[in-house]
Length: 380
Image: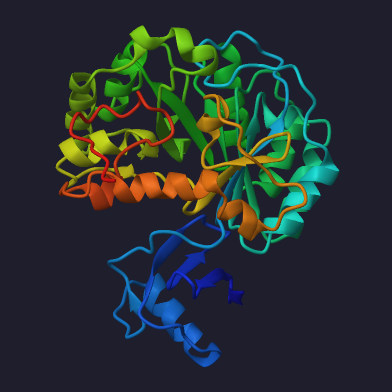
């Protein structure tokens, strides 16, 4: 439902409410003390959006999950034209891309519940043969599309379509001429532009430069026109399975977090939820210019691959996990399948006595060796 320009989701089963502004991308979720009537809804949304007190919402307490995701990561690409990205968690299977017909099935199933989709898969979504059809279908369903690209070979038309339909675009940091050119093209078109940068040993000096207010050596980027740098954890699966030596240690993370705490970064910083355990445990969280949250997988987000199989997160697709076939199923059957229920149960049963459990939710429950916290426990 809509309240003015805001998309509102009421989940009576989980006593939660979500509010999303498609123009800015801002979203808020919180718990309900009671389900509002139609007459009361405007007041509730106003109280929540402007963080004022109200008698029907608890703005300090998030619901654990919703009955439907509000973000879907959809792997529309079944193949990648660039098979040399050794840090990629995917592994090119040279398959077919998702058809527009399958994509429309997903929008029919989920569109009214979603706020945003993140388009991805095995390659650059902007290279999908029906890129415009997928973007326009998303918008027709009241959903905001976003995507990540290497920027390699991007065209003026792809940039124009991105500006017309997308909320934001992220360019993966390959440190190549095409990287700088793609970033400039998106910035010149006034598209909200992010940079995705993997936290690994060979990138630490560049990350620390950004945290300390310096442009990294060799980077041709106008940081004044960058929306945010998103720091992603290195997932040692797929093509990156041979890169364990690049994995940061806890000491590396502590050094990075110490630099973050100074609040001198060149731009906004976003953090991959997969290393939230490190951030929440070691940061002072005072001057931190960071957008952060714990894992939303199977609670507020879902990954759907090119074969129409659903997973709590995209990394499980590449870690010997079969997923749940969506075809012929209701969403309730998918969301409450053993795959998704067991993932949520892992979060619930983890770290029950930890003081930061509510913030990090026990770290990553999809890839066993990604969480560095040595104190993680599971209760039976």
